[in-house]
Length: 189
Image 1 (cartoon, rainbow, N blue to C red):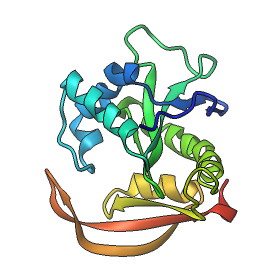
Image 2: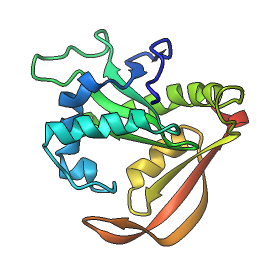
Image 3: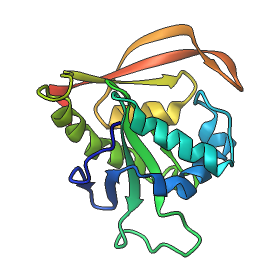
Image 4: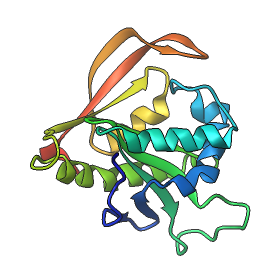
């Protein structure tokens, strides 16, 4: 079981990245139930809290998954009682593959790029060998039509490496092409 050590945190001007916990399920389900958020993932939207808890547990059960919750720092934006504490997720989905997901109300504000820039140095430090596998690069896979994600990756220092044709079966959109972006460890922000 891989539960990220609580000592791994990153702060940016507006965000806190800290290990994903089972207690985050109520905020994560807000993303999982949104069809727009889930549109380019292998999962169908679901508002099932138990399934979300199982999904988080599944992250902890995989050796190659290293997941973080993203929170707004109190100084960056006042949070109302109805606002989720966790606004997004970022991490190693299946190292060296990384991924991210954000609550739709947070799109277009630069949070994803900011979180990814903060995560990548931690990723490369964690996967630098020793007790964990060594990776000199990280990759992110995105749908060819998901321009906002292409922009996030480019702003975080990733470069487009290849286009794979019809290699991803999306449960809603069907068979899709994928763009592979890569960031070398010596290029990390």
